[in-house]
Length: 536
Image 1 (cartoon, rainbow, N blue to C red):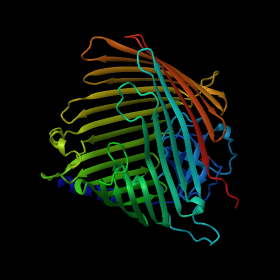
Image 2: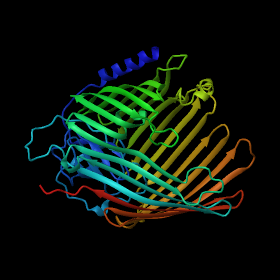
Image 3: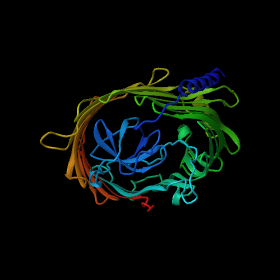
Image 4: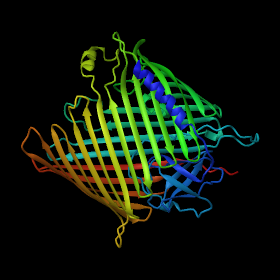
């Protein structure tokens, strides 16, 4: 009960401390970064236009592709890299950068829609829609192939489809989806798992009944309470100025295959406050969930989430879960606590610190045959992480991080140290060079991994190539020998057009202990699609 009271007090303090307001600015904060887009939040976008360029550290960095009332969707230009919470400056009426400057995608990241505030509806004529269509999507097909002189060959095909279609046809309806299919073509002998896997991670329809009332049906993760995971059902959210309330009802995805399971009914609600002004943004949510299995209570808990950015320099995030159902024994358990802070000392220096403490989540119906073991091993897995990034010169980035993981009984401890140096443009040669080193020690294993990578444009904005080498050494506590593995790899990324991309990568890995050689090939074809510009 004391933990429950503490959680509610923390929420109350957060509301009191962070509820502030101020005026407008042309500076924006990066709120979300995907492989395709960068989302930037402003106090208002009435002075911005599609095609405007945003600067970061004095360099043209982002190009606006679409706008809402408080956010801008951008693409990166001039090989510029930004991170969440970076501050960018709007440059109005600048010369548009050609699509040739857009860098080639090298990673495959799940696209998610950014968190946005709900504004009061302005006055508008019947001919002009309050909502503006914005559609972005991606389809990709990839193959993974492994051949070895000592192992069985493995071949796999994978397809992905993602879509964010906001206000289709300038209507109140929006659709989100992220679907993946994987087929294992040549499974190893005695392979017992599935060879054909179809997963729906996100698929929902949202209806904005009013500018401050939305109804969502389907599978979705609520960004105001991301630790809840996906819900197969209905979510309703209503704003009252800066305050909001929401209700969730539906089913948890199956814990084994992530499919639809009607036995796992769940329901709950939340409320919170969102403040967005010149020097301050915050979003604080407090809610409760009841999760069942075949009608019986499986888990019941309270959750809290807070995210804030102060003066574009300090970002705070916290999340916690307090279980208030303990089966026959009753009681409460703080099963999840995560805290992080990131501070930008200047344009050239930023640092981050985070702490987390997690316990095994106990579902009293799902795991009733294993309850005794879970409760006997009810230890918190704790971790702390420190990170520092420094930019001593315009083309030089340096960084280091340290993380420690352990249990509350000081067992199973591990330490990880990582450092890197990046030269974004090599004088007289061109291209980008990166060197990194990672060291990890635990009770049973020590590893040291060093790598170097060089990448550059072969044809500017069209064809990019990279090559890398990585050396890994592993020492097991119960063995006398050291295992050394070397990786040699490289690849090409070809932007066929604005919407089509093709990449191919190859790698050779060797293991000295048994003369093992593994050959890996990865190819991917990606098609992107966007809203068609409407004539006004």
